[in-house]
Length: 446
Image (tube, rainbow, N blue to C red; front, side):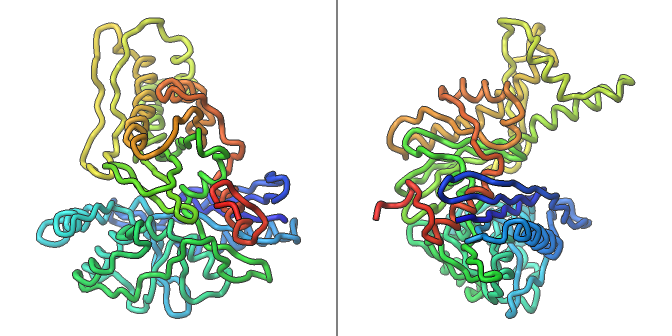
């Protein structure tokens, strides 16, 4: 069976055609998302669902012309943002992305939504997560009058493709919105009741890879969170492997057969009763991009505007002095989800290491260490020693120095994920599982 996997990312929309018997990707596709909406508020990060929908449907149309024998379609995408839908199942709002900052804005008694939820209900929820966005919108009177439900953008695409008028979310996406009890597999409706919010807007949830319906007689699988899809599409041996992704942000993910809680670690539903333990760095690969921009501005100030900062940083790493004392660079330049006000820092500066090369290596080591500190917390909740790190994301694929630093910091062998479009490939595999054409090691033996 051939399957299509579609991944709606923040900057790109990707798709793959995969074959179930060989588990091989026959062709990959990537187009620009290009749907951001300009607003007057710097904390607002909105995208246009109509643009995303049009581009996704056009991409699907092109693929089906080339591969008319598709057996199932799988979906994934940015998992924390929300779009509101009406009774006909059409969007009536922009997509409030996972980057949206309204959850941290003071809105009632001088407190933010995220601060209020933690202080009043003991619930940890981060800005950009759909329920933080929804509560803020409800308090500010921003929920459209015709809205009857909400869902992620990948779930919305599934609704449109199958002509559903109400969303059905996989538990992984539901948990990604927040205010979802992973152990009880339900939204925390008591919080909604206390806040006088309409629980009827909460979407239906399943913990199975169900078929939503058909698109041109092709079954469409319920959307999977992009973290879970990337794990499914990258990690073959969960008993000795972890997944590290470095893109705009950074993530370290580990498979667990049971629920585990630790500060700074999210437990995300995966397949059946299993979970993915995930730690996320908000700045991630952007830290290296910020350094590149710093060098670019420095070159411009010195009259050297044609300098390629990335090539220069590569040269600095290859020619740095042996035995030079390291800088200690904290790359939490965007804060953390728990402490958004936190800033990065550069320490251990001496007369011999205040150099561009030491700073470049220090930033890479800081990026690796932030994820490693999260992994140390996860180790307490997993069984067995992990020996292999599966690396994904362009931030790792394109930087061999970061690969070496990550392998050394984690004391693991590093392997690049076989598929470059890991999330889209994982969505295709989820579709195959739903169609009964693929059996993963994550599933119990029948």
